[in-house]
Length: 174
Image 1 (cartoon, rainbow, N blue to C red):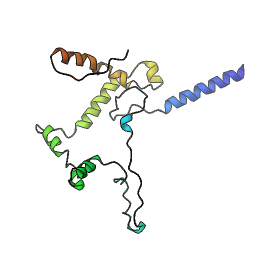
Image 2: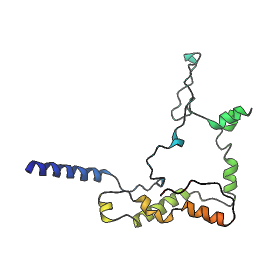
Image 3: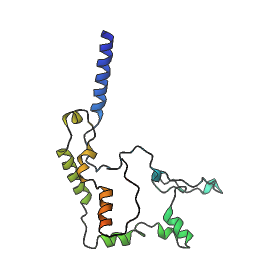
Image 4: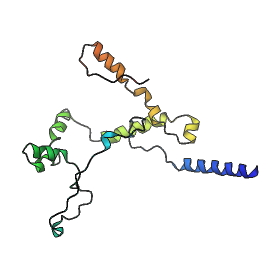
């Protein structure tokens, strides 16, 4: 009986030690994505097949953090397919410059990321969870923002009642 109590006490202290290892809430904005544990089919990106160069002496210099030749480059591929310049299509800001200029035509705040991160941290500190959730470092991020979630089906119904043509949507999961 004493051995069982020692084992349970050891396991309990090990669990508390592991729970204490998790750090406080990170001030960087968290991804409030789906709670689903299913694989993300959009996260799987096929690469091109590896190629053997004609001469190993003519290999380009290593470029840590640079572009890998076998990584997909959709903008360059589209430019090549349409007869354009792949280099011009992949130049920094070449494609998105017009979008950035349009959305910032009324001005933009350079410190918006820091401002949002501070507001997020303040909101999470006000909504830290219950005592046991704090004691065991349970992540309550999604619960803290649950009141701000958009009900996609209610929004779809609202637009349809207003007479706006909307695409079909899958039925709500029960």
